[in-house]
Image (tube, rainbow over all chains, first blue to last red; front, top):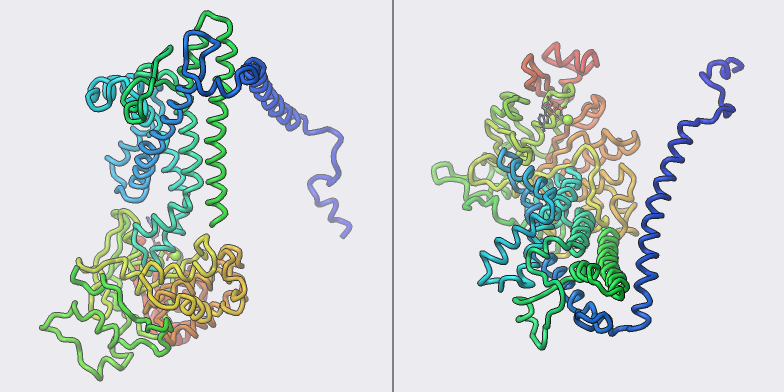
Length: 305
Length: 306
Ligand SMILES: Nc1ncnc2c1ncn2[C@@H]1O[C@H](COP(=O)(O)OP(=O)(O)O)[C@@H](O)[C@H]1O
Ligand SMILES: [Mg+2]
């Protein structure tokens, strides 16, 4: 076979000239990565340098005190409480509603013009700026439903955030459901499973990791929102919660961590700069925690399959 | 729903053993008795015990549409019980469509429309009061690409009995189904392992075991071996001839040798100018391959087109 080497279009040996375009592209990718990491790193070190001393000085005191006009006595207790309550609201209201809507749209709704119209609209809603949801919350949950929600209350805020993330929950869940292979559904129907059984026993468990990822990402987004809650009644500045019970608190003044951060960052006293950084650390920890829970749940689901 | 197709039937005895004797039309006829009117009483005794007397399923003037496109037209043939009937024909002639019409699988595709009748023990499966879910339990399906659930081997087989409210020893149903699918010896020590970890041929036999586990009367197979290597293909064919003792099998195949080797009856389909599939010839397999009535059949089975 002496002719074989001649038949090859190119030599198998590396040629001297490197694939410089490939290298350039590779380099470009690396630079973008380093650049974004650098920005993130700068932000985080800045926050940590300012914020950590606050924890060293005040310890748990910072976490358990309400916000006040004096920096030395200001804490994030109300913000943490409000943010956790928002997380609960979103999980209880937006997740089930959104996931069930997605199941309906993907598995049950007929493929007609109305369904397509609804789908397009949900996509558009996901792109609406969050301030607009704040206005919606203000006019519906605070004003129109004021007698029920207590006006500028935690309930009004929770419902506003739920409305804000609902389209995202629907879209990500629908995508996860759509990604379940059709052959799996057919296999289920082929042994006499009903649509409900196919959905519950095959489609949902298979889509669960995707649904979880999507919903928790939307939760993180909700917990970081400031603008809509400023409109929907979150309190800037100090307020007294006194000895109110949980039920009362639901219907009255509240704040959330991003609003506290926003508020403090505008205060005149320089000490509030460090407090702002410390509050940012608390918010970061809470969102990281939420993400960690999502990852753990997702891994557990993937393993059981 | 008055139809007995909506009620769970109890074909499995209390011990969970599969019935070993072929189910005669008589027993199934009893299960469907509510569908019979007084005017046409269930044919009595003797006729029912003769398996040849009643086809397992009888297609009458069936047409299936995808939207406005007619994929198969005016199909009429009956399927003898406890035998293998193969559907052959060029790609696109509507074999899969026709097969899926038998257990109402096409209902799941939006935009499909059905005309005609599929008679199963005298009852039209497309009648208003018939529950398609129950139809699919009695007429099981094995697909072209092996599609085990992403679950353990055990749970794959147990899935059907579980959702159908099976009461009895699940372990025994799983074992006997796997045995019948000629897979037991290979998997008995790893029932907890994922069904997806098996080889292609094993996966397909797992799918057959899964179909058997709900005690269907008829098993539809859509090119079940087309994605498999020759050895696994032969295994599936041997398995089919074993299964026909207890089940009626309809198989779509691209492979002429397979139809010739494995089936008792053959339906040859082709498509017309309008691309709608129709039946050219339906006979005993030996006749189709050695003594076809139509020139077109002869051309096809000898590989001159398709
Ligand atoms: N889901 C579907 N939607 C629209 N047309 C389809 C669909 N499935 C099959 N068809 C069409 O129906 C005809 C028959 O297809 P099929 O039954 O798959 O043929 P075969 O199995 O004989 O190759 C083909 O023309 C095919 O394009
Ligand atoms: Mg086909």
